[in-house]
Image 1 (cartoon, rainbow, N blue to C red):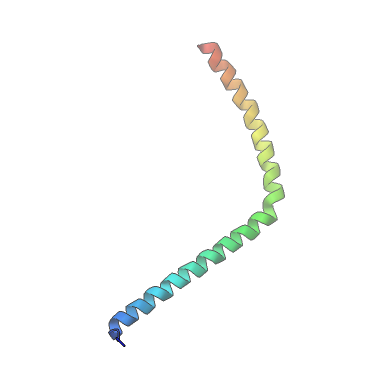
Image 2: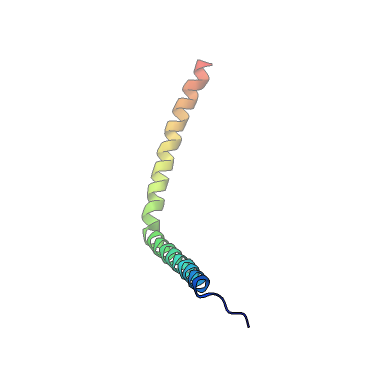
Length: 70
């Protein structure tokens, strides 16, 4: 059996701990965002529909004026 030097072992343990913590924090953030998205979904979809309908109305107006200029 090979034994790793104590300094290298500490560095490996620290790197593993950092990786595990980052993974845990990332999954926690994803879970929180998913929960917030699900709870806000109906309201945001209604806002998106309103915004898309107003954008489509404004998008048609400039496109007709551009075609008149050419």
